[in-house]
Image (cartoon, rainbow, N blue to C red; front, side, top):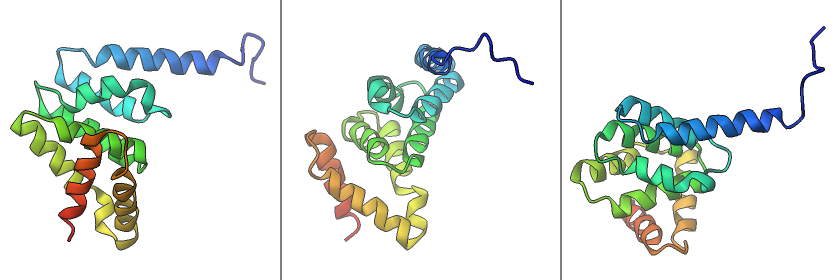
Length: 149
């Protein structure tokens, strides 16, 4: 029998909240691998909108493109508009050549391009983002689509 007398229904949310707080703190670590792990964990959060600023900073990590790569790959692995939007927003404003190239490479190497059906899903998402409220996201989505023609 499992002991449940000390369990409270909100405990799961509290645990998730603690993990989220730890990941946000880890995003400021001096160690690139800790920042990269934080990016992967934050990208897997159910609602990335609440940590969008931290993810954006990790995508544009000035110290190591490994952080950029891991965070972008994890966001794209979500296969949703929020993840793709976050990567496009970062790519649009990336000033460092290495970071910009790394973000472009992650977008270009998204595994969804490997099959026709998944590629169509990605194209549909890019088309949706051409109407985004953020002009940088709109322009980056249009640029990505123009490369397909």
